[in-house]
Image 1 (cartoon, helix red, strand yellow):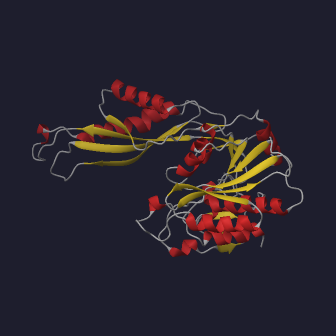
Image 2: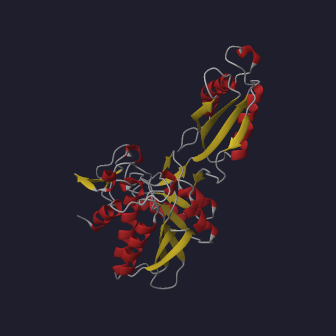
Image 3: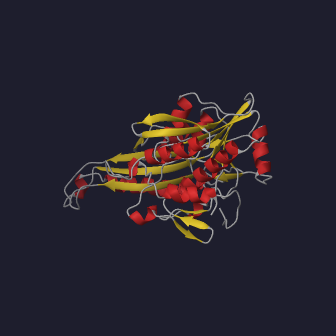
Length: 368
């Protein structure tokens, strides 16, 4: 078994579930144990190790390989350490099947962690370390919830000429991904007894008209907008709630929306177009943000020399795009040109979290 695959086995066995997905004080929560393990691995291989506290018990891990002479550029390797949750303890037991490893986080993104850190450690032991390029491995916390790790990295002023953000892309270089805007709409009505619904105003009924409008007319208008790598933006009504019991006309109803944005679209613009659509159809609803931290789209220029070089090294003539949001947009907004790249297939993520062994090859890859 390769060193990267063995490291991935050990990482899967160390739970690092984002605390947002677990009860308070759950022993599987947090990235600290994985960060400590990776710090020890990096230190043994001669890398300079630093912890960057993001929140109590949740540090980013920075492991640096200094160049043999004066640094002229810096490359950032930026996978994330946290995973989503899961009830069964079996998901933290790595299992091999053919050339694949199964287990929580194998694909998203401990496969990238293992591949990137192993490559950096091998380079540190080699006499052919880069002459003028500093390489920094940044194991980031909280990507799965609020991206506080990447936001902290940017806020503390780290600069880089290129960030390679580890996500399961089937080892295809991604230079653009969609943004993600969560919104809530609330309708207000007037309560009345179910025996006299004519005395009330049904907030659920009003909301049902809004849901139909968003999923039909609005969704159709979004399909007319095109991006060469990302296709069109989307809208999805994810939750709905209203009323208290069957014999009371509901006076309030809420829905939550997931609006995926393209480069060039803004939060303010999306809010304006939804408000204008409701006004046009004589519908009234209060529009709120569910989360405050921006999740913008990302697009990195192909004219940048390092992007060209990385594409060529990956054997690609053209980049690809991703429909999901990740830390790359946060880093790019902070002034670090970013691409997304890593082993595994996001389309195959399930409860087991499947990843090919983290070698820089597409063996066993399936369509993205």
